[in-house]
Image (cartoon, rainbow, N blue to C red; front, side, top):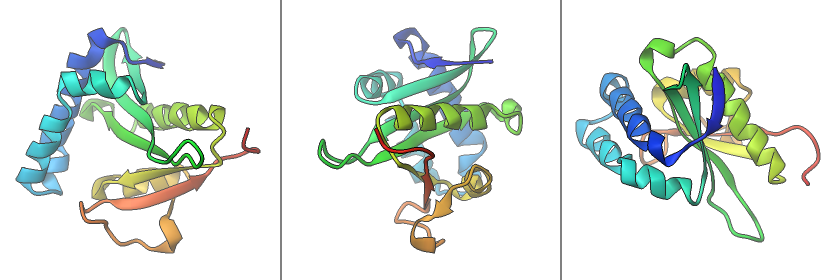
Length: 161
């Protein structure tokens, strides 16, 4: 498996992977209207647009996209605030280390940018995954946000650059 930057030619595959994940897994935990809005949000065009402002990665196995993950900065130039976003893995590749490797790449990118921590909004079904990677509930509070996700934070090793 290889983790690489998203190429525009992979946007359709990433959108299809995300849609499948949302329909097969996320729909078991969230209302259908919310899932439908997410599917619309993750269109190929929006994925390509996102890749121009965020660091979007894909996990490839024999050139097939089997996972994706992004690093976004929701802060300012003076005070960046890095988030791991849109972490999705094909259902048949769950529990095989794909998500872990994607998150390691996202975290490495954050460290390259000088981050000393990274935040995620963990879906109900992904909390355990992030906990295994060392993420803690922000302020020690395990209460879902307005979208039903849990805000979790991880301190990154080393000194900020």
